[in-house]
Every structure is written in C-alpha cells, then in structure tokens.
Length: 379
Ligand code: CAA
Image (cartoon, rainbow, N blue to C red; front, side, top):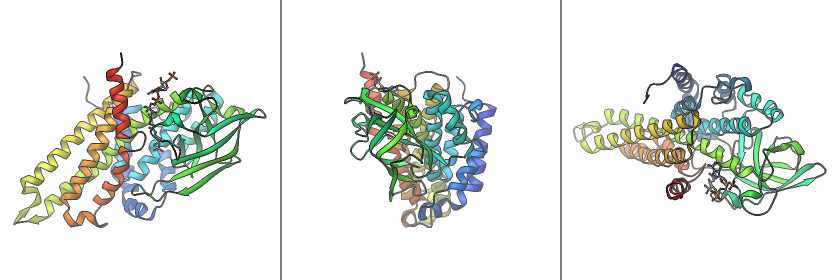
C-alpha cells in the first residue's frame, strides 16, 4: 500500500496551492460578498492546467490523473470555495467529452476548455421539478429537419451564464432513464436563454442560473453518445464529480480548521487561551481526525478511478462523509469563534455557508447513501 504522492501529484498540488494563496485568497471574501464571478482568475487557472487535470495531453489537458485533480481541488477550495465549484464542473465536462464524445466533438471543445478559451463548462441535468430523481427529467428533444429541437428548463446550473459548452440532458424517447439522451449546446444556440442568477446562501462568486430551451435548435451532431443512452453518461460523470465535491468540501473544512486553531491560540477566556480549554481541544481534535478520514476516503476513490477500477460506491462514500464532516468542522470553527464567528470580519461564517451546499449538489447525502446501500444489497 502506497501513501506517498508521486512527483507529478506533488507538483500539481503545489502549483494549485501557490496560485490559490497568491491569487485567489486575497479577494475571496470580497468576491463572495459582492457576488463577483472570477473570470480572469479562471483563465489564469486554465493557463496552469487546472481546467483539464485528468484530461489527456493530446486533448490539451495535463494528464496528471484523478488523485492530482483531487489534491488541486482541495487547495483551490481552501482559498476560494466558489472558484473550486466552477473548476470542478469544468473539469467534469472536459472529462465527459473525452470519454463519450466523438473525435470532432472532442476537438471542438476540449482544447478550448483546457486552455481557458471557454471560461467554463456546464452540466445541465437538474430541472425545476427534478433533482435527485434525475431520470424523471422532462426537457424534450425531438428530431426536426435533420437536427434537434429542445424544450424545457434546466435549474441550478453552475456556470450556466459563462459556459462555452453545456452538456444538456433531454428526453428523446419514452419515460424512464432509457428515454434520455445527452447533447452539447453552445451559448449561440438559437432558442437557448440564460435565466436570472440565483441569490445563494454561499458560494456567491460562482454562477448559478437556469437555462431555458424554447424551441432551441441543435444540429444533428450535437448528440453526445448514443440516442437513449444519455443517463448512464450523467451517472458516470457524477461518480467522478462526487470526488471533486468531496475534495472541495475538504478544502473548505481545512480552511475552517486552520482558522479555528489560529483563533483558539489567540483568544483568552477565564485567564487562559481557548486552546488550553479541553472542550476546545476536543473540538479541534475531532475536526482534524474527521478531515484526515475524509481525505483518505477521497484519495482512495480518486486512486480507484485513476487505475480504471470501479469506484461508484467509494465516490459516494467519500462524498457523504467528507461533505457532512465539512459541515461539522465548519460549525465547530464557527462555535469556537463565538460572536466573532457570526460577523464578516472573520472568514468562518463564509466557510459555514460555502460548505452547506456540498451535501446537496451532485447528489444529496441521501442519494449517496442510496447508491452505497444499493451496492451492498444487490444480489
Ligand atoms: N455509472 C454508469 N451507469 C449507471 C450508474 C453509474 N454510476 N448508475 C446507474 N447507471 C445506469 C444503470 O446501469 C442503468 O442503465 P441501463 O439503462 O443500462 O439499465 C441506468 O443508469 C439507470 O440506473 P438506475 O435504475 O439505477 O437509475 P435511478 O433512476 O434509480 O437513479 C440515482 C439512480 C442514483 C438515484 C440517480 O438518479 C442519481 O444519482 N440521482 C442524483 C442526481 C444528481 O446527483 N444530480 C446532481 C445534479 S448536477 C449538479 O449538481 C452539478 C452542479 O452544477 C454542481
């Protein structure tokens, strides 16, 4: 069993760490408070290879693997959770294209995602009426004049207003998952419009919008994969995406723990440092232990994916554990800060808000448990 990182993994992690500390951290609180999307910073990240970490070099990526991707995501999220989710979905879209796209689709989009020519990629599965039950989606795609016409609304789409290419799932057949196909839509698609930006509890420097398809016209070759086989593409993409969200939660929780340790060493109550009270020590110890366990679960899932082995269950285990632990860790950091936790002068209120959605998007904790239990109980 090997716990050491390779040189490449260390290099990617260091690159992400240096960039995050120097470029992301200084304005992170303000961007999040004001809801400013970090367009220029994302372009710089692409320049460092961070938008195609697990994408082959021949496609414009850095081909550093899934473990390196998870490590980089942790570093980015430690400094800016909003940028991390944008990076996560963009990498996921590049990977889906490489896995399921035809040569022409890959050639058209993947180098542009990796180079930063596209600000981001987007993943449009959820709808106003369905999130967890993804196979119930209603957006329709019908054939017309050698192309496709899409109608429906996609909800909570990360980077939807900035995406150079959006993978969109729509119903081409009957009910259920086998009636669903995946398509690629570009921003110039006639009939596609971007809805109002959501006013979120956290991660406000990320962009979350609805996408409305009203007789939206896509060419014949916009179909990704086979007709009626779009659902497994979404599921496989989300398996990998869950490693990304798990890593994001770990990065945010790491920042919260560090803030709590620093504050506990500074602040005095009852004649001694907070850090010298056993109640605080135990909170810090629990947080550090949970964080370590989350990291190991996540890197294990990443390693399985990287080595081509099944990883669906481990990705769900990593996500449910890391994201729920991150919520506990951020809440403890917040509690340790007392009244100062509640004001914007300290970063822990942002960490708490940013971590909250990680147990929701890319599959709720309940969906992760369902995935794990199904595998346990299958014959
Ligand atoms: N990999 C590949 N294929 C898979 C798969 C996987 N992990 N899981 C299921 N499939 C395939 C099945 O094999 C089956 O294929 P066949 O047609 O060949 O039989 C098909 O998909 C249907 O599978 P199920 O019957 O298991 O599907 P289900 O309807 O019971 O749903 C679910 C399963 C796990 C609940 C799924 O609906 C799910 O993951 N829901 C959560 C959706 C989600 O995570 N949404 C996140 C939105 S995106 C987002 O948040 C991004 C963002 O912007 C941040």
